[in-house]
Length: 285
Image 1 (spheres, helix red, strand yellow):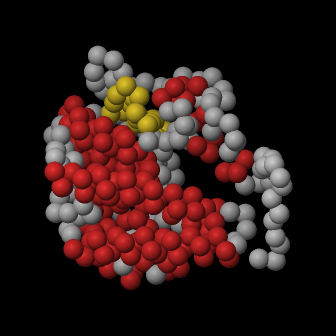
Image 2: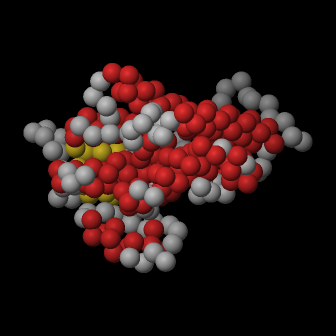
Image 3: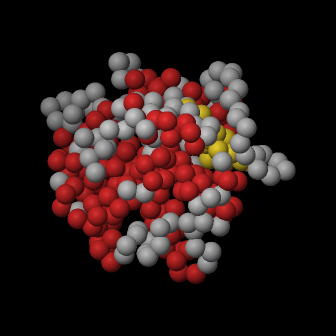
């Protein structure tokens, strides 16, 4: 790097510039303005965006509905993080960390707020007894890989994705640093999937639903336009698994909920019934 940065003795928030994402961030938490969240008619109210973290939850909801579990019906409302929707007073009450996805479970006597994507996956899987083994080694393996992606994905998204795609300038050191880590992670997955049909073993679980939106989309060329740069085709076992998961009807449905960009057939900004997704998928070429 030609220019070096010397940190001051005390950090100062200096986000001047045209970078949209840098200007949204602040070092303090809490609501920035008053606005209530919309509420639909179903037991589950999801407030999200179709980022990889958001896709995890909508894929699980659609998988549950595909099993005929009507009790898993949900309303999904768009949270536009580029417009700071996550800092409304209503959203902060559901998730004090101001990150998507956030869920309000109204299926019981008292509403429960659930935040962090892995927590939502576990909450729903346990509630409906699906996609999470009830006990033993299979359950532990599912948790191993679910928590693996919670620790690994920030290095892919906030690390590699940020510096490769969103940073104002391309910088060699951070791109190389995080590219190496992402390739190491892909190799970890590739070796695991060489021995297993799904990530945690022979069964499809919430671990697959959590990992696929990040690493499946990456090797399929849907994330950061980095497939060639990272040589994702060399991770053949990950590619096999990613294509297999992508073919699932519930995955195709869940990945487009709360999506407001891309082709017309992949945009379902809000979801209140199966028909909201059906009518959009009919436009698919």
